[in-house]
Length: 335
Image 1 (cartoon, rainbow, N blue to C red):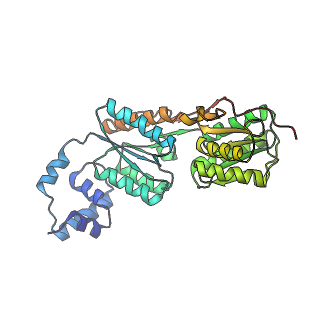
Image 2: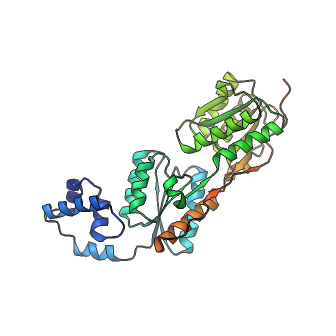
Image 3: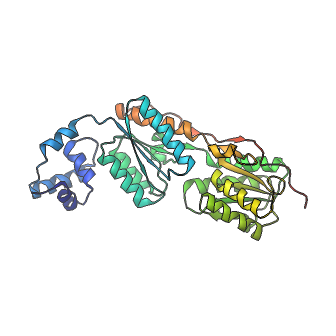
């Protein structure tokens, strides 16, 4: 007897797509639907009556595809989405993509297989075309921390360029002229936009960026530590640093301290995100507050609304990052 896996293999699609065609739960492109139906006919496939009964039940779930849950930024996304799910009496299904395209795709397919029609999706490695294909099949899929022009009404994101520029402007206003940028080594949208913001702010102040002032490392505490060693080795003349995120800033501060430098007397540092640890570092970290909790709440509510009503009027889904001044910035050290 043919199985759903046999149908999927013959049709060249996932088992989740076959399930959607069989149960008519979400939109499937006509060409794909025709392939699945043809494969079912060729294999003489008949769906199991018990499985059909289960599929026909209302599946009140909210799916979340996110990054590394050990990172406080992604933990905050999960916490905020979970609060919305609880308030709406939904079950939350969470998967981690780990900033890997294959894992992100597998995560989306898993959420679909679990019957999640409403989804909040944090995907950085899948290309636009792939996400657009998923969005066509999932009218209640909302992107978080990313936007695609065709999905602007179903995406929630922060103005990374303006946020990064504000952090540089603050350092310039404090007297700094030699400012480095410790950024991610992944080719993701956030990295590109924040680096552009850094470059724009420096250019507006007529300040030349030396090539060795941009340091690329994994966006983790370890990456920040490695950047600290490179900073001293390749550009000791800089007096201030903007970082890709707060955990990189934490690693950078620890590295500089171990090398005998003080923050902010020797180096001023600004983070990005304003996760919980930023206010408990010593000195307390000045950073750009990324309202990811509000963004995640908004995205989860939007996904659930789209599940119930697909013709919701477009709203403004762009959020601003704002400077939080604490203790890690001062005037530059004397040359």
